Image (cartoon, rainbow, N blue to C red; front, side):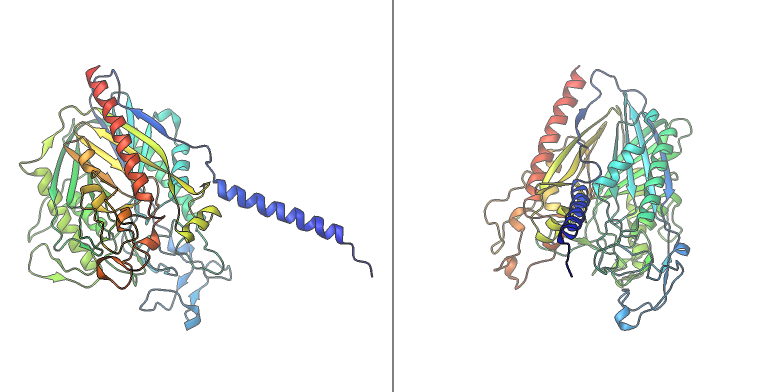
Length: 527
C-alpha cells in the first residue's frame, strides 16, 4: 500500500504554524503597543477647590456558581490522591471551585467571611483627574489594568488611574499561579471579567461622585511588636502608617480615608479556605464605624481604603502574638481572631492620628502625576519561560517584562508606586551586603526612595499597576552557596522574584521619575 507523505507533511506544517501563531500572540500580549511616559504638574494653573469622590463595588465570587470541596483537610489543599471529593455543581466533570491565591496551589474556597472590594477614590484639581484604586486581591498583572483603563468612559476626563492590590492570601487566584494543575494552570476568566467590570464601575462612580472637599493628613510610627514580623534578614520594617482623610466641604462628613502601611494580609495562614481580605477588612470597618469599649473609639464614617505598602523582606503577621485592643488578652494562633485584633489596633492608631494634635490640613491641594513604563529583566528561569510563553504576565520584550511606576502629588502628600513587593530597606534604608550573598560589593539601591520624595507625607504603594513579585536588593540576593548570614540554605524570597536586577532597575527608574516630576512641579509653581 502506498502512503502519501506530502499531505501529512503539509498538515503538520499547518498545525505547526497555527501553534506558533498562538504562542507568538500570547508572547506579545493583548496591549503590545501600550506605553506610558508622562509628567503632568498642572503647569500654569492655580490650585482650585479640591474635589473628591469615592465608590466601591463588591468583587466577591458567588460560590453557588462553583463546585464545592467536601473533604476539607487540615492543609486546606485539595488532594484527590488521598481520597478528597467534591460536589460537581457545575456538571463539568472536573473540579471547578474558586481557587485561592497565595501560599500553595490547590486551595479551594469553601466559604466567605467578608466581602472583597474594589474601592476607588477620585481626585480632581487644577485640570487634573487621578483615581486611586485598591483591590482585595493577591495581585494582578499589568495587562488587566491596562484593559480597565481603556474601558473607562472617556467623557469622564480621567487622566490617570493607579491600581494596587491589598495582597490578601484568601481571595481568588487572579494570576494563574495557584489554580489546580493538570498540565497547565487554569485561570478563572469568568471571575476576571467580574473583577474587571466591577472595578471599572467603581472608578466611574467615584468620578461622578466628585464634590468639593478638604484633605487632612497624618502619619504614625508603627513599632513591630504585636503588628508585624520581618521573616528575613536584615530586619527592616515599613514603620510608617500614613493616612489621609477627605471630608466634604458642605457637610464636613468623611468622604474617604486612605491608609498605607506594609504587611502581608496572611494572618490565617495556608490552611485557611475561607474568602477574606484578612486584617484590612477589620481595619477598614473599624475606621468607618468605630469600636465599642474597652478602648473603643468613634469611627470616621465614609469609605476607608487600604493601600499595601512595602511588604517584601518579608513582612508578615505569622509567628507573632497580637494583643486585643483592651490589652487584657492576646492571640498567637493564625485565626480570624488574630486578623481582627490586628486590624482593630491599626484602626485605633489611624483614627488617633487623624483626630489628634499632629494632624495637618492641606493648604494648597494642587494635583499632579507622572508615569513611566519600565522594562525589568526576568532572569529567574521558571518565571522567564512562563513570561516568554505567555503563561504569566503576557508581553515578552526579549528578556524583559513591561511594568510601570508612578508618582502622584496632592499638595503636601506624595505617593510613589512600585509594581511588586518592595523590600523596606530599598524604600527606607538599610540595604546590606552580607558575606555569602551572590553579588558582593557596595549596596546598589541607595539613596532610599522615601528620602528622594518631596512631600511632607510620603507614601509608597506596593503591588501597584502590576504584580512582579519580590523586589530584592541585589547585594542581598542569595541562591548559590555559601549562603548569607551563616545559613546552610537560602532565605525565602528569590523563588518568587524576577531576578537580582529587578530592584536596581526599578530603583534607578524611580529616582529618575521623581527628579523629572519634582522639576516640573517646581516650574509649575514658579510659573
